[in-house]
Image (cartoon, rainbow, N blue to C red; front, side):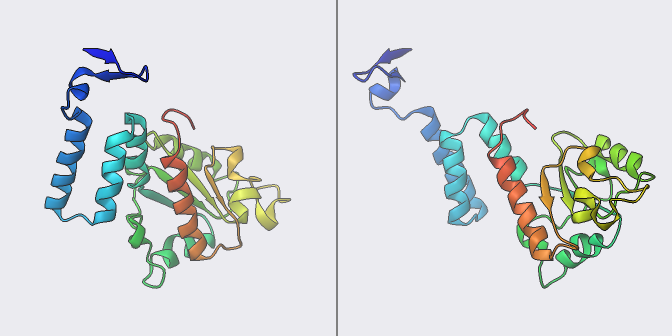
Length: 200
């Protein structure tokens, strides 16, 4: 049962009688469970905030943004920076939780296109993208994947992967530094976190 208070807003009857709203009980129970698991205070605060004020849409986006599984598709020299160097100890992509490069597109949700896309490999790139489960995201890494790079005038090079599949994050450079790859993942994380479910 709901009644209007003096401000005209509707509140549950129990809330007006001094009882705790259900959402507060859920937030407290979540806090208790996270403390038992040994989570750090920053994570507990973020989870409590999401549980308290977020609709299901924000909760889903928060979960998706913190569990990205990349599928590395190295086509040329950018693969050395994007798939190899960024996973080494100096840059350590695992600090952000993205180190699990999946061997199959069916297990991944981020396609990392690294390098020159020729017209011969283009159908394979599209097939791999279509095999990924929704929601799926694409990072175009390097000037060749973005626009064809220095080979754009060649008869056999696709002038940008966005002619074939939708791209979420463009990562320029020839090749981009590993720090830029980490930045691209963090930008994708923010894009997912603040997106609406069903919109791409």
